[in-house]
Image (cartoon, rainbow, N blue to C red):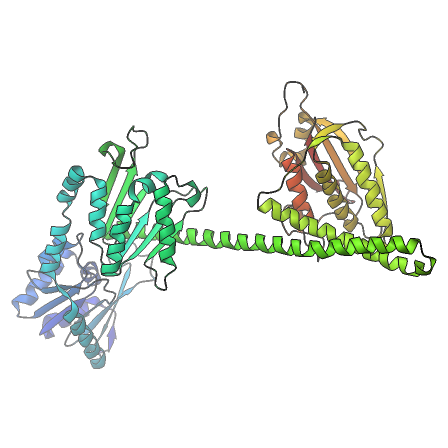
Length: 589
């Protein structure tokens, strides 16, 4: 005889012919399935064993869903209840059968499709599992007492009667009062939060925590949309309690704008009780003190499958809320870091620029100091470069903190372009870092000379400078950068394939004075190496750069500036295969 067998019939034969006792340990539903028989046959099997004077003991987990079948088994066996029983085996003095999850998912028609059984007759294994069973048996609760407690506590008829008579809030409190381990509380809407989270409920939960050391988890809507001051006070108090070394209250807020919605209110108690309440929001009753019967529908269940499903959904939402919270705090830390670095850099940069410019004035008036002029000029150029980076960092900090403002005035766009080009040409010619490049700057002769728009002059100047920087980087040695200003209408924009993907239907519409709904279109075209196709789709994102070792903020800031003016910005490689063109469009005055 082999020591191990996977045939369940072998265990049945051993039990029938060699037993003085048989012990069952595990979820009741697995016993008959693992032996390849149904519930009726399993009861008959136990009945035959009892007639043969064989002692039968069953350790299992008893809940309202399996009470009817456990009552039947009490006719043949001694039964005790153990919470969250994980071990699964059957044993007598001659053999032990272990119940294992199967990896075979193909045999869907067989009752054994999700289980494997292994039978062992090893003496040491038998003795070890017999001792384990006896120890668990000592801690078990008599099945009759457990069933009586369950039926007295929550009979379905009494549940319905109680809710109809006393209301849903009182039933929620009763469910919570029955908790011995854990309360899971989920509400995705203000209706659920305002009607079920209260000082009274919070007081009840605190008492439960003190008495039974239960764990309480809340999932609630984003804190910024909560309307009740009392609720916000409770949440703040929860946050204080959560800071304890062993927190029993834990809460998470759903991500703002979360579009994944379960029912409005879900309560899970000890993974034994599930209550779901759905509001009828079209009803007239919306009181926060009394929830009228017409305001909601509900379902209450003790079915393990349903409870497991909603517990899993709760855990998924909890994980999403935790991730959103971590990302939120990480974003805040990043913003604060950027803001701090930018301000710390700006002060010494301004000092370097100021003192260097003063020194060059003295040198210009002193022939002896002329030999040092080139050094100070280099200091000023590089300090200006650093200052430009600092400005972009500060702009990003303002954008992230929603403190970025525009000072709009009616301006001639061609004048801003000409000023930006002239200033950049001067910087370019005097910049030692660009001495190996020969680049011509041009403002197209066909540009509109008198077109005006309501813009922030300094910010549009910044956009042009950032775009010039990118074009210069694309040109390796010799090239040309051409700026063109034109006036176009919405129809022209819609005809441009590269524009359609930027949702120009959302561009600001003008009043009746502007019949053609016109826009100012600016092109900055270069004949450099072009934009890598892998970078092109994310070119205007934060920290994305077209050049290695660049911080990648200029285009991100430019995009924000243009869109804050009600415009759009984009980039594309030129159709002739040489270079690229950055374009942006602004509403016309």
